[in-house]
Image (cartoon, rainbow, N blue to C red; front, top):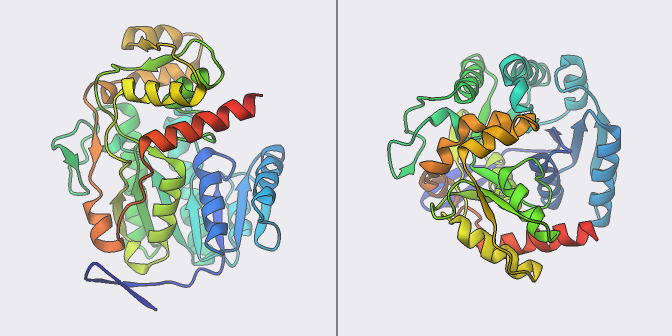
Length: 336
């Protein structure tokens, strides 16, 4: 089937089954929900049976259950586990969230596991990636041709991972790599913006990481999942890289104002600068690892979605005000 959009022809692939690795993380959960919404039978794969049960309960409330949804407990670093879960799958979504502190030792082995499993079952791979490999921006809107010149260890690790997928492409394992900015949604607790929104939602003193005056880009997880799943249904997505932008840029002041409106609050938020983040990181390892990426708060990198839109149509982009307020309301309800 050929889908014509904006003058380009897209060839739809048959996706009778998809596997989401890291299904209990924020991005994984959003992907599972979107795939089920599209009517695609989906395997949710993660290591925690307890978290998978929570995910299953959430999907059940939305009207999705077996045989549409299959829950598999396994180790994303174990080739046999991933291969077994992927039997009969057409697409493997790689959204495993490896903690910052473990990137050096685990990012490459995890990618190798996915590639080996995909080769064994002859599936395509969809890779959820961030923007770190680009390094400091060299243009106003960063497109896919922007040089990959990472200026941090984490950026270098992501580039090594990316090169592994590119090498596998040359050997016949198809993959599509999607670069996305920082996430937010009620289901994305391990993000810096969540740190701010959750505090406001629960009427606690809040802090915003970085200057509140500098516009930055974030992406609402339901939008990200919709954009990725849509593109992944076409052959033209594979052996390519795609930038998926958010709904433009937004200042911290705007984030805080929208969040306060949703929470029925008028509290001001403090600002966390690099020195403060380094200090807090003495007690919270995840925040300690975020110090290296602080430059993105000072000189933000904003993505261009032009390539995606020319090939697949408009990138879904819920306005920040609506998405932030929906997130805060959900967090507030979850806390009550």
